[in-house]
Image 1: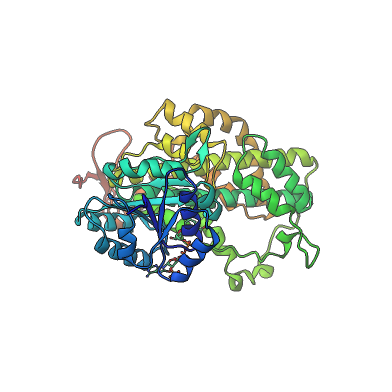
Image 2 (image 1 turned 45 degrees about the vertical axis):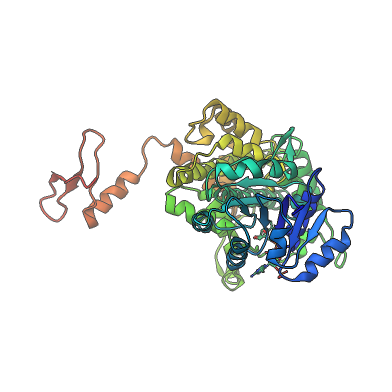
Length: 479
Ligand code: NBP
């Protein structure tokens, strides 16, 4: 074989990734797609690219140098399993199969185990950045064995985005670690987008500014600590006018947000791990609420506050929203990194959280300046259990918290939904609280279910005889 890397699946993502690979010095790329027309089109449209087209899995295997390395970019789920099975048939021990699709990390763990038994290496790699990222340089989150990383690392480094001179790829951890981190990346993306949307909505309703004027606000914010791809594209979307109606495009887009499931996976996994990713969850639920028109049609019947929102000092209000957004964003990232930390503990991965924040600085949807601050925080204390308690973030939250409270209170009083702002603040105050009403919940649990409780003043496990004389007895320690 003459090709050093192969791509299976030449739809939007695969064809762009194949072109990216072929554009790098020294690469020759074997390409295969189930329907031959996609392969033929790709070759015909890019005569300059060093492609070796294949029209069967055997031909594909024969065109690759050993150890063979192939990246699968097909629809996640059954299609991925079908391609893996075909490649396992055509490949030999020592070869490397990479799944670059959006697989659920538990599927990746299962596949890695099954493929490993054949002597072939399997790597689940999260690839972020959409179509443009695939072509110009994505952020790549590979899992898999250390052995595969030796071969794969240099190839992935050559095609990844570059942030401040460093390629946006690192070996995340074994088996499903890469897809786990990609999943949480998407969860954080949901939260970031929802927070930006809430900020826009509050500014618009409070100040009456037009979408184009609010675009200017976001463009200005993009010069400061909020600088990020999502803030930048928000300004672009808000500035866009609809050719048909002459209205701002944002006013003619149906207000029902879609989702492809990775946000829900992030929340489901967090529930299983017992990690409170409340900001991410609110963002996922906000999309769900938006996409139930039959439920929302009752909105006119539900009473709201009698007075609308009016602000005297527009500039001051906008600055308060900016601070609330920044504080809530710190919470969203802190919760996401908490989930990665908990996932690593559960699945025995060694994940360098600082390295994760660095590879998100380029190529992916949540790329932002802000990620450097996260990298700094983990460089200073790698064992940090709650990211937002790092000195830099505490210093940022200090001056922001008054504005944050004011904005959440204002939204509630005016009847404007700001679920991600509000839940982020509640999480923050939950962490701050000296005592939580969880003590009462424990009392309730003990009352109806004899679930027992611990005391603040002595060791042991206790139960009150609620239906007896209400004296306290020491319960058997169930641990
Ligand atoms: P799609 O997710 O639309 O999948 C289409 C590809 O899967 C085609 O190449 C198709 O072959 C192939 N395929 C299917 Br469907 N069933 C197959 C089977 N049984 N055997 C072999 N091939 C099969 O492509 P995409 O949008 O390029 O996304 C690829 C992966 O990348 C997905 O996992 C996606 O979640 C992930 N991803 C996408 C984005 C994005 O922005 N779109 C971003 C990040 C990650 P055919 O041509 O013969 O039908």
